Image (cartoon, rainbow over all chains, first blue to last red; front, side, top):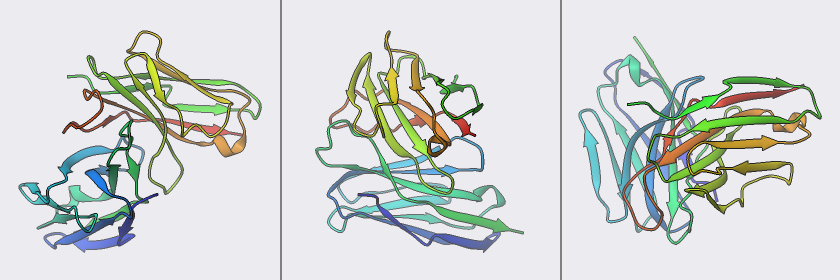
Length: 112
Length: 117
């Protein structure tokens, strides 16, 4: 089943913060976050493995709550370059081929 | 280094035509995935290869869709007798991971945008 992302869309001014959530009904092994700009390939941001870890580099970080099967992506002091659609891809425990199941995406627009 | 490449980038086909989409994964990557992305949606899994073996084709929507990776590197996704509902972006992704537990992610190509008229 497809993970649910929220919000569907968000508009920020440069410098503002945002949180994007990803929730699954299945037990998860990992969560992968990507950003996709129009007409381009999804670009990998980070992977979180079960264990409740939090990762980040500079102004983008993420957390994974294994018990709740939820992950959140945190964008701080947003820049114009952050604009795009953010997808979470989930890998279910024991899925076998470890394909990713993606949410419908969150469209982020950063304006000056 | 070079990333995942796909060709053609755009393809227009008349309904009923056959098409072939090519994926060149990152050199040395064992695993290769095909996804289909409809407009405004996230990618949806089609099929998975580990080297030349197609280990999962559960996402292929019909028997008109066929994928191969004969030498464990380049892969081709073929769609026979295309229909309008096949219009989408077809994404290829590769990974160094061999399956099972691991920390590696999937790296995507730019996709082939297919339009069936």
